[in-house]
Image (cartoon, rainbow, N blue to C red; front, side, top):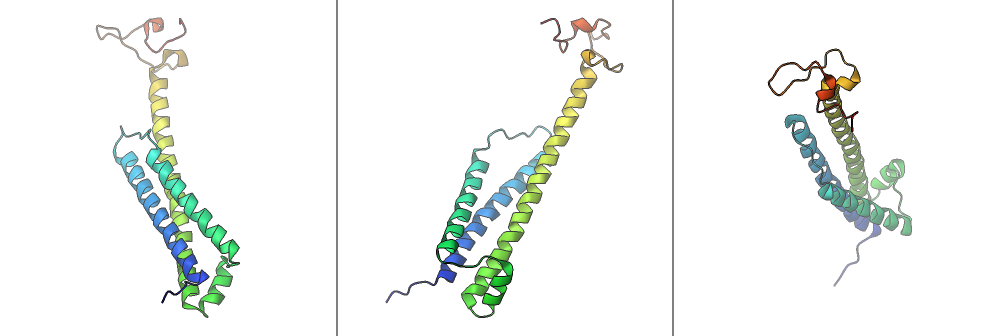
Length: 164
């Protein structure tokens, strides 16, 4: 005999799927930030995997919201806490929704960290380029001739593109 699952237990399953998607995305972002922090040459221009994970999470979220809406299920913390005291499946929903909210906060924090790491790296590269570019009128900019001597003529610099 088949038993139909209650809307709460279906919602709990949808939340678990969303948690799983968010957890995999968080692990991906943590790996990316660790690589950015430890490997100065690491820049991942291929965002295919990250986009696939984001799309999976967005789809899981959309499915959960649509299901909850179609079945008039509450997704507010206060309402869920009241329902949790009356039903085991509602308690699972409340627990999973809290876990999902925490994962969401971790995803935002990890994304900010990656942004900061990329920003620091680009600022460093810009400072290096500025220090080597005579056109920036940087008195500390030093360029070299082919023989290794300091160049006195900034127009001979490879970085001076004003003659092009």
